[in-house]
Length: 156
Picture 1 (cartoon, rainbow, N blue to C red):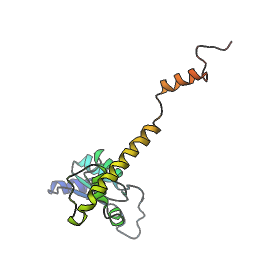
Picture 2: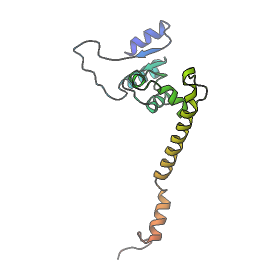
Picture 3: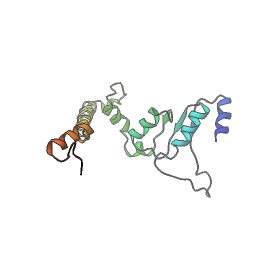
């Protein structure tokens, strides 16, 4: 795989769309969440050529994580877009990307999509703040104040 990627790079290929397995009926590839990402990661980082990856990448968080972590350059998503045709527009609203092109017939829905995304983002931030565990020192101080932890006492 790596040797083929090196040959493609030396031949002037700009980017490799990494897809593995399922080319003969006797293959039994390991299939799971983001299953082709390790191959794209290896080619990108060992051969030094940009990669495109697909393969059971179903959420925007997965796609963004793969790109942000330097495991691939482009994520191709087929089924998520077929099942949710407005995924890109919703993502633009979620991430506050105002420059995203919206087809003219959807312009009237853009303000609502942005408002709903902003509200959802605020609610998620609040949930995260409320669910954040206390600092261990603060938790210990609270437990000591309640008498749940004995401090400085040794058993004799």
